[in-house]
Length: 325
Image (tube, rainbow, N blue to C red; front, side, top):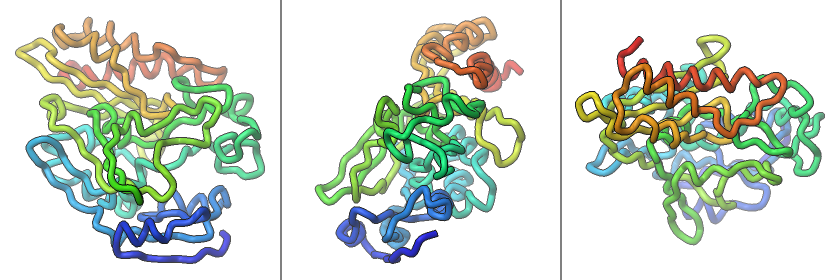
């Protein structure tokens, strides 16, 4: 790890005023410190934002507010989150290890970098790390990589479980910059790799995530997160699904579906959700809608199994939610 200057400002303004070209903000540090040790990221200045007022877990009449500095474990176990947004609690509890959840912040989880081995190995070409150098994964080991939203420049999978749940529920981010605040849908915040995989999101230099807002949708209370992985503990998703359904009697009135482990960003499936609406939540409806989950996929040799697996993951999540298994 290279030497760096450390600062700990007390306010957003002070943090942003101190931000320079070679600066990085740090909260829990569970991603950044790892990447600094590998010299994937080499900031010369770390600005610790833990003293800034980006905290709080508040359930209001319109949305749940999550301060970006809240710890993953605290949000996962909060009674309002568990009661009104179970998919968010479940996604967090299936993320990382208990030790990491006790340290990592919500904002940091949303901003975590890909776990692609080639991105983390500075001796190999990676367009995300060094634009124009090439994508080693396309011809290399890509079993864990994306099949949706990929390009000839990058097939890295987005790693966050929480972001999948938040995208499914149409969550927004409050961003604080030197020119003021702005609110942006999380789904719009993330960028597809295209020809510029080094640009992962719409965060401007020196800008901070201060708050996550999750709408109080009726369907959020009937929601579930299912994660399929090689081992049950401390592993990234092969596929995952965040599902939420509102019923009028036995008929689906509204639905939300998003998947992880298969996309270069958390991947919404509006076509699957739309196929559920107006129908009974039974096996026939679930199987028909889930077959749309891999539309637009571009699998490669080693990750082609994810096409069928993501369909089965969505189907199982919906069946679990409907009490059909």
